[in-house]
Length: 106
Image (cartoon, rainbow, N blue to C red; front, side, top):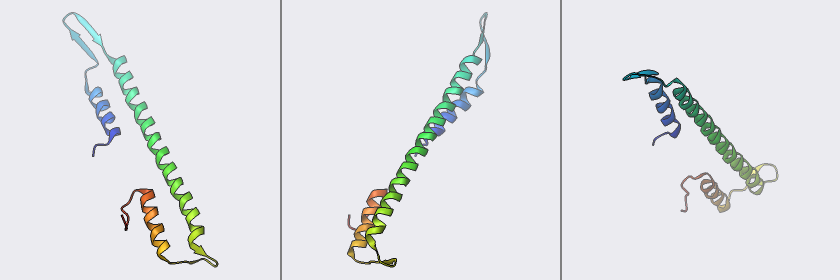
């Protein structure tokens, strides 16, 4: 599986390896402003992408945490002894579905 952020690192590395000043017949071409703009774009995109991934992961973990806290009250009785019934197995399946893992009962 390709990592999307890695592609921009590869592009940035390829851009840095290119010549900045080139002579084409009688024209001297300085491409440093273009190189810096491309590198800045790559860095900005990586930062935004990383921030988005962080935000998505944080939100999903918060959802799982909230779900576990809500379910804990359902399945813990009195002095903290777990109430073990078929319901706890169904809870496990529901939790697996919530976080995208395979379930016991399909």
